[in-house]
Image (cartoon, rainbow over all chains, first blue to last red; front, side, top):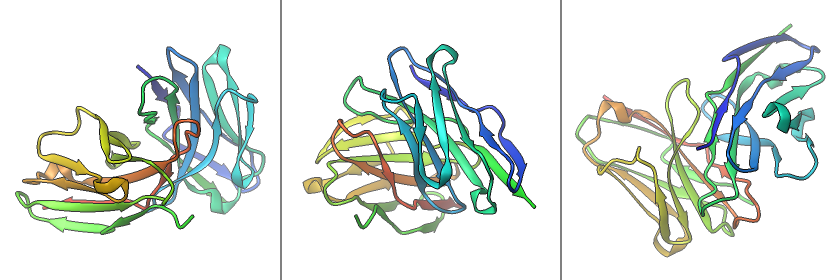
Length: 115
Length: 114
């Protein structure tokens, strides 16, 4: 069974500071990993995905994530936070087995950006 | 892409009533997923369609829940005899075939059972 653990349900950073949101996964097969962002009362928007190509993945809005197999991690970073980055962020895992390719999500990390 | 749409966006119902939600996927996507998200949690998988065939159902999907995707286009999710524990955001997502694992989510339907 696959699972994702997001460390820190709330993260607060100052505008312009580094954003680091942590995600560790568990999977018995090579995983596909995703970061989604959710703004209040909205659906989820894909930020980036790892599908076994380059280990450093660049996404939208200046976000990137690095797949580290040895650490079973896929942490999300952004060099400089903007007020508009305040939202809920979800890490998710899927795999290439079976037919569904359903996503298993973490519990989310709420990012607060302060002036 | 016009995006995934869901209707209604909000539904308030009394316990014991039946409700039905609709999802319209991106037109060329043959995969459609339903997820449920409760407050403070990540979305949880409910069920999945490949075209019109429902290929997988989660244990979360009790007998009171039924989903359909006639003709492989839009999908409906019905909840019979609603309970307060059914209150949640119901999210629909669609994707192309398995070579592209990116799922596009709709805005969700927020259900409140009073």
